[in-house]
Length: 71
Image (tube, rainbow, N blue to C red; front, side, top):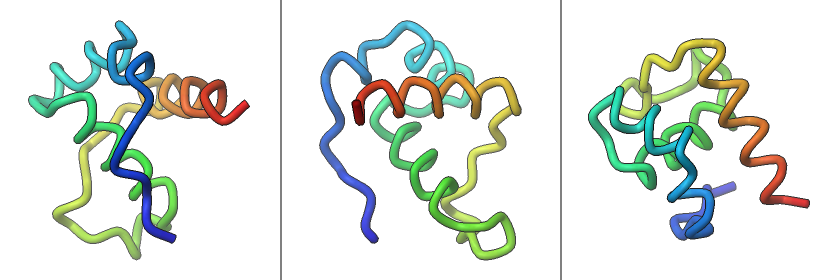
């Protein structure tokens, strides 16, 4: 399954998403794209160029935010 390339504006503008993206020197859209790729693969299967070393708390924040958008 290919991750979406268009993310809701409110998710990309979320303060937490912007903060985490800035911390990793990527755009919010890139962060969300990489997050969804990492989420859809196990760590051993994830392509190396698709990895952003997210902290466990960052992963939980992004999971929570992405779940609220699905609802």
